[in-house]
Length: 409
Image (cartoon, rainbow, N blue to C red; front, side, top):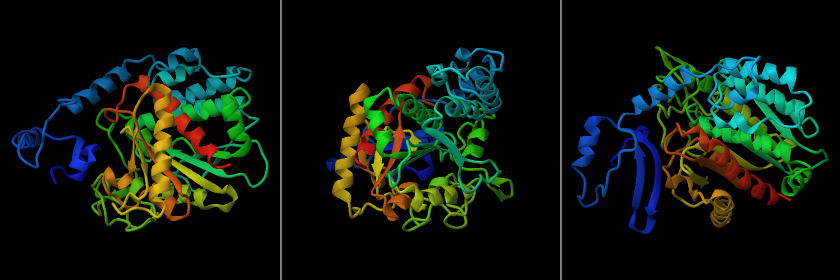
């Protein structure tokens, strides 16, 4: 009752039996003064801690840093590319470089993941994947383009064979969550390079087809790179009229109680659900892929940031899903697998315990028979986690991907 939905960036229980929670929120000075008055009051706030005293200033500093970076061109060696986030033009230049100079290189340097990359840099990296992992990796495109007409690439990692279980992983429904698609792309790279070199990955790919959509909301992601004022953009880029843009893609899936819980019918809201389930082509396309019987999808990961959290159905209600005990045990197993990598704790919990919301991918997948449906909320704090989180986040989530795939055969 203390916060509006749009103010909350993160939420987790400190002590569930005492109903004690930790909330990360973005508020203005007036709200801060109001909350200070509630300190130590019964049923109120126990403590307040300021992460950033001025979020706009933090974002402006990030963009100031990016504006001074050495821009990537096809004539520059790859090391600099990975020392900073890149915009889409730089990604495209890097893709050109990959095609020209990396045809015989066994792997791309991990420097790529030392900074966030713009969409052009991602496209260049995807070219590298196709050139160097051609034995197991192929790229196709989802059934529909984004609202602005961009094709959405999906990578298939497969060693062939019939009737294998499918594992679908998607990322970046929310544009500002740069760590999500960076870590997911790292997972893609590690799976490609690991086949034939890592026993666990080799066994997984011999038995499971893995499908990865590194970035669903391409339009929103490109928009979030324009400047510090657009950095926190969340939705896609649908034109709602009256200079209002965007639908929250993780409220647009056809799932129980669509647009009734934790969402909004106001087109200006960050959690606007759209005009109808699957009004957005990005959601329709990803849903079509999951439901396609040829893909035989038996597990779904929807990658976000930040938490760190491992969330499982239901999201729309506190009521337990029919497979609650299985999901709880599965979430705990994922938590242990992630923790074993760097000792980082991802809290496993029912999605609604973060906050109830309807129209999510995790509820859609579960409602359509995919029991192992998980939302990952990666490292923080904030949506602008420092880029040195990319590789460890990718390594942690890769452990969860391998464990999940192993349950499918």
